[in-house]
Amino acid sequence: MKTIFAGAALAILSVSEMSQAKDWECRDLLGSWDNVLLELKGDIESGSGQVASGDLVHSAQFSASGINRRWNFGPTEDKERFLYTIILEPNGSALYYEFISSKTVSPSQRFYCRKAR
Image (cartoon, rainbow, N blue to C red):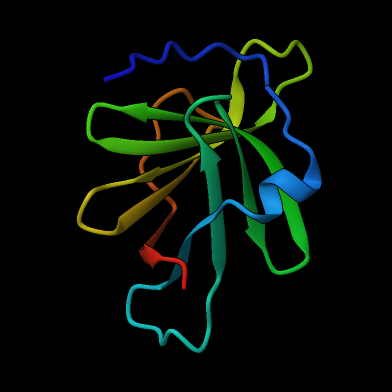
């Protein structure tokens, strides 16, 4: 098993490599799979990933935190930390956090995810 230490630096895969790494698709908790809101991709080896919502695609730092998967994106100007995080739990629950105005936050959105088909 690999241990990953997350720093603020992003390792970037080429677009073609990441487009082949479509891992998870997420919907609103009460929504239908016909309305996928997020696509999450991550490569544990490189620590890079993507968060896609509609036509917005963000490069992300990807890691495993215990048994959870984690995408950090939107680095601050000083590149010391990230403004947004999505944490995917083993049961498919995903929590979206925004660290814009406060250091202590609750998830602002919740999703249900499954392995992409």
